[in-house]
Image 1 (cartoon, helix red, strand yellow):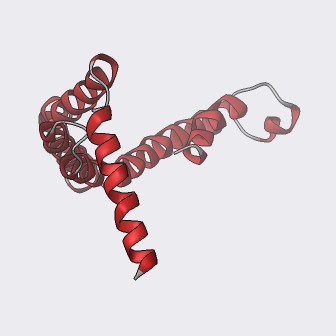
Image 2 (tube, helix red, strand yellow):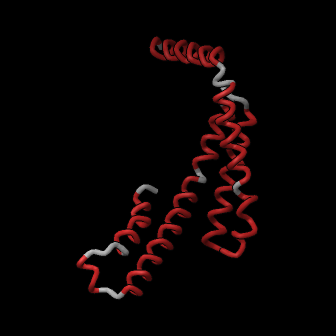
Image 3 (tube, rainbow, N blue to C red):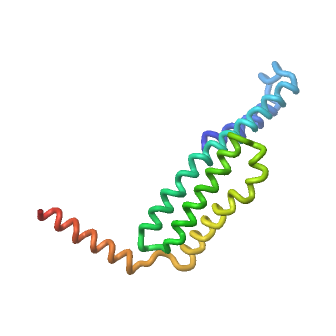
Length: 146
């Protein structure tokens, strides 16, 4: 995603009044600038497609943990499905994207917002965290002694 941001910088460099750019007509420079902006849009879609797989993984970990409510894990998994459907529509059938866009990213908005709000307001259940940590230490000692 960070490398893709270079495609946003390219039009600024192309449209800057630099001496070596005099070899191109203004129309050619404008066309190249538009190409890089379109390329950045496609790159962003690819990065969201990859980002979509992050959410179910984190959702599963949250669901299996006892430190956070399981519903946050479920919502995070739905957020991943929303990102995935949005990104696939962008590449496979762009006209569908206009219909899906607000609805496919709604689970992502809800998931990310609820996780953020939960962490700000309630945080992690420290008691359960310590219980898990002590259980893990006991299990490690047993495996070391065996």
